[in-house]
Amino acid sequence: MSISVIVPAYNEEKYLGETLRSIRSAAEMLLEKDTVPTEIIVVDNDSTDSTADVALSFGASVFRETKRNVARVRNAGANFATNNILVFIDADTIVPPELLWRINQLMANPACFGGAVDTDYRAAKPVVKIYLQLWRILGKLAGMAQGATQFCRKEVFVSLSGYDESIYMGEDVDFHWRLKQFARRRNGHTCFIEDIQVVPSTRRFDQWPLWRTLICTNPFYVLAFRRRENVWRGWYKTIPR
Image (cartoon, rainbow, N blue to C red; front, side, top):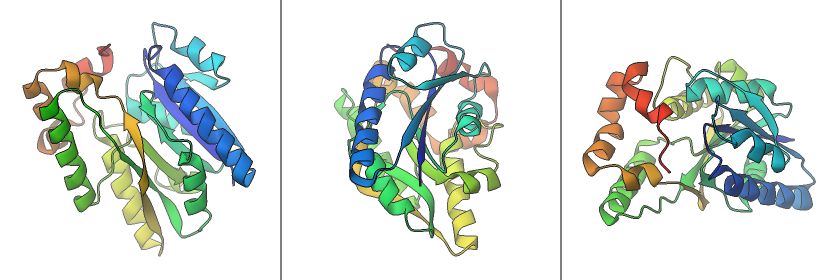
């Protein structure tokens, strides 16, 4: 097996370097333990800052996608990927050194079609931290998984037509749900890694008023408006610092 890590990024010059540094450490551990190579692909979503330069400085391959739709950006990275295991990591998410090695262990079983990794949200506001932890627990009980880090066999990804580009929010939960259903129909399964966690940035929720966090993370609100580009324009165009 071989792994392609895909990182969608829009104006992430401040956070991307630390993310790529953690991914490189994970790639080095995987190569050392299992001699499995990793390619790192950053899809620059028409950034106006130095995102592409940061990615190049870490040895990543950089491709450009102008449409502001994270599903489309993820799919663009998958189209450029040359390896047979796809790992999607958000540009502001720090991963542990064992991440890719653990994914490789699981995907060595042909019955595992893909999956996701548990998250450790470290919000600065206590009330936000408690709220995010609550949703994390409820999501696990409901069998949902967010897209801070997801992985999948490339042939399965193609069979599912990737992430749904008609969705502007919640495309990661939708993809994981479809992946689980696809695996079950073919006597396979998905894997959820809990023994290690990735650390997504919580800067949006730390800077937003609580009411906005409650609205934008409400699953009923997301489900109702996930295909309405205008509703999520602020999410895509305004990146908290």
